[in-house]
View 1 (cartoon, helix red, strand yellow):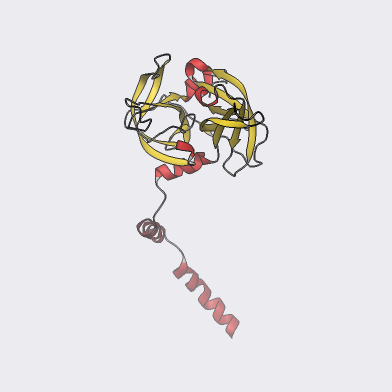
View 2 (cartoon, rainbow, N blue to C red):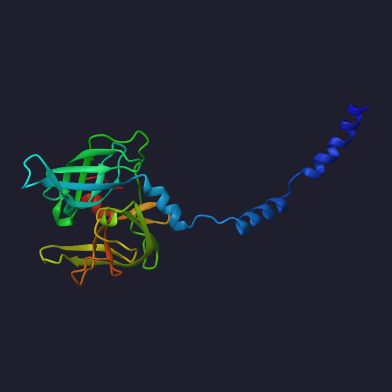
Amino acid sequence: MSLLAVGIFSPSFQARSALTQKDIDAAVLHTLQTKELPSQSAKAAASIQGAVVHVQAYVANPKKKDADIESGVGTGVVIKDDGTILTNFHVISGAKKLRVTFFDGTEADAIVIGVQPEKDLAVIKPQKIPDDLEPAILGSSQQLVPGDAVVAVGFPFGIGPSVSSGVVSGLNRSFKSPDGKQELSGLIQFDAAANPGNSGGPLVNLSGEVVGIVTAILNPTSARTFIGIGFATTIESAGSAVGLPPF
């Protein structure tokens, strides 16, 4: 009798339990209304964070024969599966030793494999890399327009990885170094906060693609802090300057 009852009532129960498109829409709407979802900036930063590295440069300590002292600190971004890192030339210039720290805490010495001083760019190669290292996705700056949202990820003052967000403020900008010895052109101007230590880090669109390499900040005073105007070399210019194939 019980088996017969199951046979009679199961189809009716299944019919009442079947989900309709209206049910699905209501469930999605409820989730959107009650659950706080990550922002687009947060998702963009998360997609690049594993490819961002802390770069430290060292020179010989004049007071101690067998010791080194830190001469520079900056950021780099992994652009190849083998751990190849793109950064700024001024971060590694004159260094006796380079050390990079990956997202998982792995530390490794690195060597310079290519430089373009006039573009303030350098490529370095670590001696070891994490097993699950994933390079950044390289995008294009050609579609950028003023007002587009961007994210900068790096190690300002060695703190990080730190994330800041803002917008593209202008395109095809020029920047002259404080000493007047170098002028960079074709730069992306942006207002996502950047400070010393951000140099060499990625400027990322909301799809998580690297569109530029943070290169300089405008400093009309000696404070060396961000006042709202930063500059990044386009990823196309960065790639061609260091002899990499087109992205």
